[in-house]
Length: 512
Image (cartoon, rainbow, N blue to C red; front, side):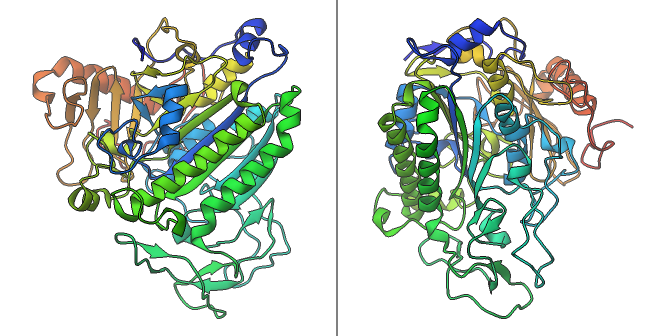
């Protein structure tokens, strides 16, 4: 395996049309064809939950391993935040979510969508350049449901949702299952509306977990969630994958004849409820969680097999990554199974340390990417937007993709001429960190014990040795970069944008 050395990213810009098209096509294909894109997004999957990244994993993920073998592995790949909603915002818009009104935590199911109308998104960019666009899976960015809880008219359409943010087609659920409004939505309606009520029920097979399954209640009571009579939590992965396959099959002939597609497939696994179906019980050596990851991997294999069967694999970009690190049950898995969901990294979901945001990140594109290659410098999910824009030969417009920087040069096996600007990390409680090269500066917060720290990740990937006292010049440089990026409204030069709010309470390190 060849290690590609150097820094990861070039700023997005206009490519000569011929160059962009050559990058987007396989040898012998018609030069008018851009690549199809399949973006698979898992939920709460840690870096150590892929067997190709963690040789000591207590379960195997052969289809993750296949992506690594046939594509590029980003060993230093990061989500843009450490919980669901803000990471999904960053992925789809190329902008950090803390620039919006969401400074901490996540949304419920019912909320004005965090993506503002008119903002450039990954699907809107692709749709505007001839792509068929679809989303199948979990949204969790806010939707506007008809009426109010207990007084719905489900004959009316859902608004402010994926179909309003660049997707031509939507099939899925509104948010994480613990937030309710659970039904199988297609477009703006659910065939079977969420007219019943439920609470979380005990999960007998997983650690500190719950279930969403019948029987459901007909009468509304305080604390209950809206649910459809036919909704069962354990069916999510199968239904999502079946629907994704059905949609791709319907677009396959067009894709073979110059009409590319983009499918965003955000799974609900291995997020709670951890409910592997019976077929996968007893596999691996990490309990129900390992079985759930094996099931997830199996569905990934179904998608890869589909691309082979439809003769689409060569010119389809498959991106596989996760929204944040593993849920806090990672601690108990270490005790019970000796399985480290965060791999060698510190902590997990919600944390500003590496285990919270360094996630599995694979890209396969046989027409361009050398099989079995790696990229070991920092890259962020916000960068996907600018990378796709460069593939299309388009520059991102102003006030779009503010924190997105293309890594197409890395995919082609080259070494970028300039270093990527720093990556900003953000914890669920609002704490910040900045990463540039091997250095990571973790900032103090309002919370007791959360002080300023500096880590040399090249020598200390587990963030165990705070070297702040010995490197004042590094601290000064990183701090100045952090202030500039956070206050300016952009990482990408020329974005010409601003934050949606004035400075907020968590910026305790920012002088008035």
